[in-house]
View 1: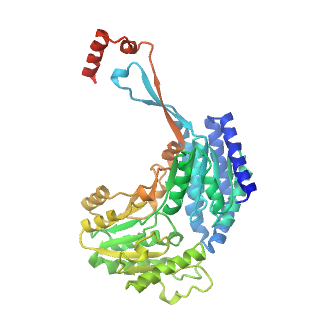
View 2 (view 1 turned 90 degrees about the horizontal axis):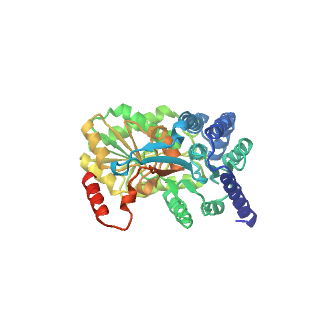
View 3 (view 1 turned 90 degrees about the vertical axis):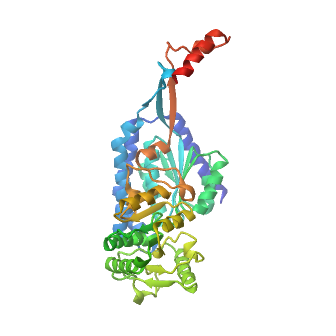
Length: 472
């Protein structure tokens, strides 16, 4: 990285650090204004965002960007504006009897300067979402977008510069070297969305400054089908969850576990619904490309490896397997996948769906628990007992029942991973709390009897302490 780039990065950080020192507790009005400007910025640039993201991906339907990037960003900011007054209030907390008449309170306070490292798969929403939470909490925000979406990253830099001062929020574009230098800055909080492998490096860099981190990662998110499910309806929803953004979604269903005799009927239903949603692949304006040639080659390698080891590949459109000059990949169901295959060892992150058999629900749960804890888990079925067994005996960052993806959009629920799929959470009030110091404050009363515990120790201490031990 050039020395001038390092200087630019340091200057941006010092500018925001100085601004925070001058205004450490922005008012409700200031915070609402910043959130409203983010909404205005998003609305004014909706078409430009659709075009930039489509350019970066090779192709992505504008409707997917409108739904998954623009709409979600606006509604997240509107939710924050609506609830911000309550979030900012100092919260009255319970006080134990033996500390009365003193009282407890919890005071939300901005952390300072927040760094956000954003991914390429949803380049705007996964930047705006944490930025909304950080601004709501009263922080200054520095953003490093992905170098794999250069058109979108450049557009975001222009958008933010037009609507925010560098003291409030700024975007710095650059390659992986810039990302490494960015993560080494002594932020008051660092937020990263991306792969588990890169997340480890980000956490290590932040640790040198004792910078707290939120890591939104991924993993192999399972979908468990119970015999009690509505197979046709469930297959339709599963198919959509895997088709959205061509499977390049951190909470996309990665593999499916189904009763042995339902595996092939489920596979046929998924293929049928894929063909209904996208009657053609390569010339279809509704179907998204794989983001880069490297990512597409990786997915093809996963398929080739599975086939070489004996798996059965079922393409949705067998007549369109030749991709031509584009980067679109025909969706595939994979049957007979084994643990030795690459697609069962790493997150797939594309339109490839292994469907595996199980003979008992206990066996399915054991298979999920044998791997890293995933970012998402899906259960399809109407059997309440089976559902509760899955919920209580597995860990996941979040769960959707009888559908896919939609828990991600809940502003009244936290979103975040567990274990290898991440740490920390955001969305709604949980995002506000993530980027705040919830400072405990104990207010002592003038009538407190704490003097009775002061030395010199003697009979008074012994008597009062004996009474205290009896009442707690």
